[in-house]
Length: 447
Image (cartoon, rainbow, N blue to C red; front, top):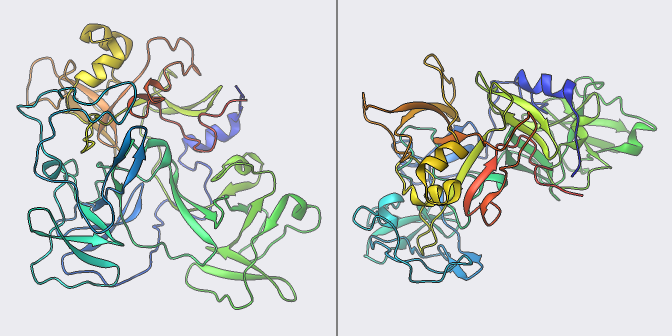
């Protein structure tokens, strides 16, 4: 393992300015306006940036066709496989389970369409730009975007919720659903990726761009030897300033992109995509089109042998639980109220008491609050993990991230221990626990 020591940087991050430049706390990502069908809108969300939403403000998702170890699931372009039929058996798509195993709680198991209501279109709906209309197996009309059938999620309750899925690579579930949104308003040659800290600006090859504290507004002071390490991101001759994007004249005929008046560079020592390692160099920062809010109290950041992680007030690493069942409709099993058999099998070998001892919930104090949608305090019945009813005996208040409870691991003895990371199936991605990593670029790296 490699150890990364960033004590000074951690203090900056805890203050809510993690690895960030070009994105004041209130700044929101701009997007390309394009025609949309009636009843469709765009909402700028905290983690995923601008997403499409229906008339009620519910985020819109796609379920693209994906290859798993034992076959394919999801929607091919132009059709929907998410129907009202309740799936009753496993599909054998993940080793080591064979197909045909009876799924839990068939008496209450919802269908795919019940969990993922289709974004329906009127019978006379016409295509609009990238929006097309497909016919569902039951004959109903459904909107599609870029050929992909579209859905909302019953987990999203308020406008701006994006609890049904994520585009962040670290938390993507196997064969999961992903929010769909408009293109970010950026010049050709750039892209934006979702990370723990916000919407990270990268170049066309996926490598991060950076900004320097030594530069002035639309003025680059990186010259000579500086350019051996930090390569200016050059703008083509025909490029023009547009909104938040401006151009710096480095020399006659040499033009450099700037975002929110900060000249942009790549880091010659980056070896991984969407890296944040250049931000370890004093005076240099990653660039974000939009940042997430600061961590709520009592959470903090700790340095571990595998990277920077979120920890509770005592310095214990905090874990999220990920689960999607091995069925053709790939329903999530990690939200409050989903079948707890999956989680208890991983955290306690089928024993609830052992599970609660091995993976205790992160308890929230009576006055604990969150001022953003990413973090929340929920009341649950601890044995089943379902949401508690008002005044229910034995209910506990716990912290949740993206709507799902958080945990610590009993075998983490000292601050910096992350022995529970990837405990579960498929390195914790299919059914298991993963640390809430802050650094997406090396959170699971090894030498």
